[in-house]
Length: 120
Image 1 (spheres, rainbow, N blue to C red):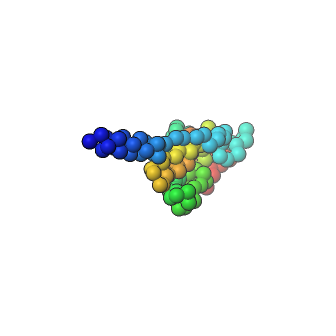
Image 2: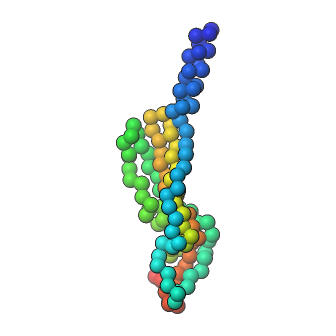
Image 3: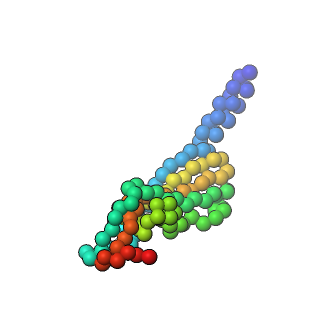
């Protein structure tokens, strides 16, 4: 009985060591599009968020991870031209032999006007 208990404890401990998650900052930016003093914009949604992710198996990425795709996802979800007050974050989740990486872009979604004209 004691041998089973020790084996189970060792197995649970190993499982806890080999799994987990963490996040890391990926950067900040004032805007994803240049804005001059003649331009104006309307915030259509605060804290808009988009993401892109991939799976890594035994250290080999099984697809691309793109900040550009995460940004385009945030703009598409909110029908926006750009984001302002932008932050990026990477999230990692580990599961024994594989893990996931997720790039998250967050900011205020805007509709943009260049010197009084709508951007199309």
